Length: 407
Image 1: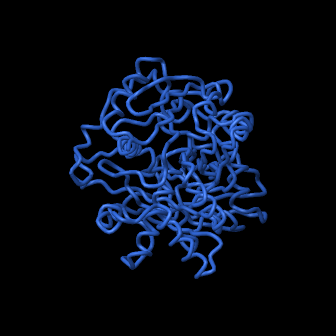
Image 2 (image 1 turned 90 degrees about the vertical axis):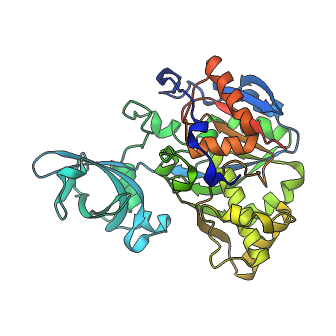
Image 3 (image 1 turned 30 degrees about the vertical axis):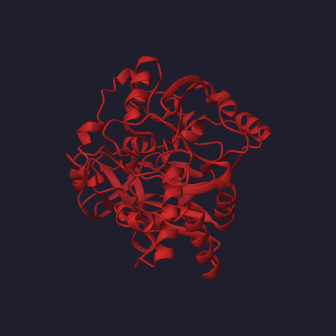
């Protein structure tokens, strides 16, 4: 079966509102951990994760950092407009770092709360912004999925600094409260480093310096990759089948050193920390397949590329594909491989690079749940049934799972 033929109703389940965590646990590593291994389900606390990973396992983290992407502006008539910055537009399209470094003006694709009350070229003034910034927003145009907004300010600050000073942490829509001061810390991983996400890679929220130290005692080290998480990660599949669903794209960046570390640790077993890390690893594999088979006009991985290339990849080992990408980086003098990925991982997809996945519990009818189903098959239902009946909390601030990929 091709994933285009999936009936999304088969990946629905009832998620009661009280099961959705509205706040993080008091301490990151005291969250619960469900362990799935070859049909067996058990549970523990996350702080005991090192006891459940084989010695020399290698973790791959997403080191993206959430930006305070929610901004509030006031119309000349006094009405409020909320902006949720999604990704750069205009001259900085496709380059988040460049956009965040601008010092006078930028354009961003945004979701707009109250858009019907805002006409083009009407200039809004930011609420609660210091007078020295004089931060303004102008509606440029509407696109099929967002609005392009021009933001301008004074004083020489970078846009990253403006967001830190004026913006609010963009908690997911299923967290029914306003962000508080604690969210600035708790909605970031302890390994968060590269600014650019509008949502946290939530699997890594459970890790603490102590857990990382305990892992190191078992010779379990880690590599960092970057995937900037977009708002599309929250979107359920609304079409009846995947054939009518357009997968969101996200920016990835992987250094040559990180790629070398991943290749070297393949024999001891890779565990992806989060669906974003897994999506990055699998994107790297299919990029290598394109290079080896010379079957591309672009190395970027589109929604169905993995399925179109599957017949060509049957004899290509993960190490071979990743080495091909590494050679490509050497040939083109690239210190980092950067691209957008639109890869959709859904049954009957077989995970190529990782042996395990650490992740949270995901929304019904979501592409993230489809990824889990690709990793462990129909047993995802047993995992979620167990969690719902054993007091686990779901979604971004909820509990974690360690899923060993089905052979």
